[in-house]
Image 1: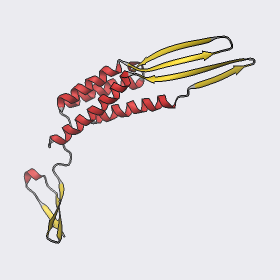
Image 2: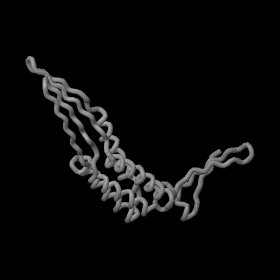
Image 3: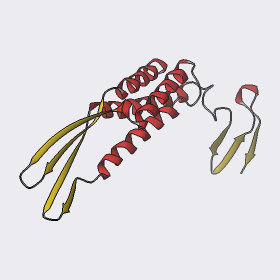
Image 4: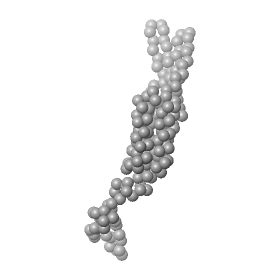
Length: 175
């Protein structure tokens, strides 16, 4: 999982340098119409710059096998979703008039490959981080304590371990 986590973190960094958004605008005036297309790259946004920082942090956390290496992946997914919802909420048509002159501007937003790649790599970073966290017992935050419920006949017993399992099990039984 460590190597896959590093791979998906690097893919998230590369995705920042790809186009995230394409904006098309059509301006209509009385006898004039113009059409513009603008591509927005992730690196030109504050979300993209934060994505690079999180990608680097994620690579380092996976490389040094740090606990909670899934947190940068969560944050990358969160950034991607915020960016997509921000685009969805933008208006599509604006109309303005001044005296006898009126103009209408229509915007079309299209999410591009870089944003999808950024979001998917964040999801896979999170999955790899979670699998890494749960597969290595030294990284699991609650592996040294536990609650055990056993049933003997009609009697149910609950045991709570209060010391690390490696040092010996000290349990209390409640009926």
